[in-house]
Length: 348
Image (cartoon, rainbow, N blue to C red; front, side, top):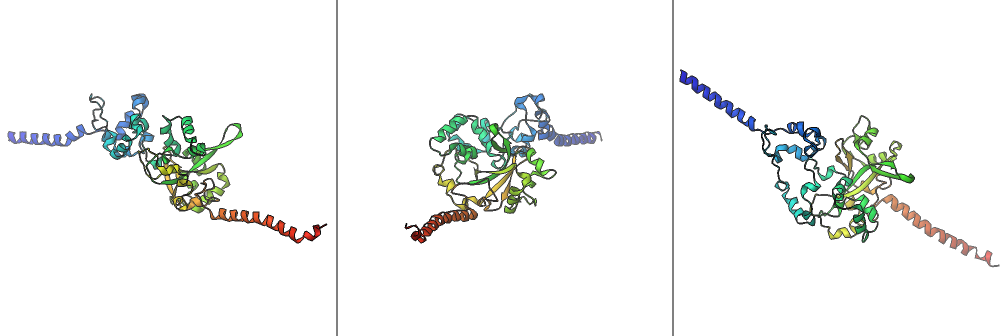
């Protein structure tokens, strides 16, 4: 009897060990990590992680221990060093592209990318993309080097992310952003990218995308673009267009076709069919929404603040241009005809 009692106790102890052992060595959940690392006054600026910027990332979906697998429930009191995954463990293809570039000799992944604030290309604005480049490349130097061969260099650099040209991506997409009027010095007017707070003043209780997406179907129609542009309540808001690669690449070489003006300015309406409107989110990222095919071609009403010489084709502008040309011929021909018919009256 006593022996059976001892055996029962042994089985119970084994069962407890089986069920509790995984719990004792299980890693912390992300919320547990952010309970300390989400506060700079607890861990210091170097180890601080901004939860608002980290949570929307793909890395957050994977969980902290995917990269820091040595962390246990006893951290930080277990005395164990925290392991960190190598970026190439997951991003081998991009890493191989980057290693082959001259940049690899001067910067590692973390010099350009904060692993706790990494977003896809669709969630970042053009100016944000260029911030990575400007950490090393001075604006004045970039402007001077491009001005040696690129007409209107300042305008191109202001409108395009660096990776539009410095990439191995074969094609691009048109991205529209809502910009906000702001007063500059000497009475000049400029525009900046509208923030979530800016658009919230216009949308009120509704989501910010409802400023344009009136029917809330997560798609921008040509009619909705026209309504937005004609609405006097939005007179301080304008659409600003740019071009970004349609895929992410870390091969920073410049393809030969980027030196050819016709790549952008005479590529025809086919390349202008696909476009997106990018809305700022509360967390500081961006969310893209599809726009009607061909909307970029309606430069008078659909996208009046986006016109690319030689690429944007508008039937209305063609008609207006034809009228101007015809009027230019009518005036001298009419004048000459009248003089010919009245020549006898001037013979004296």
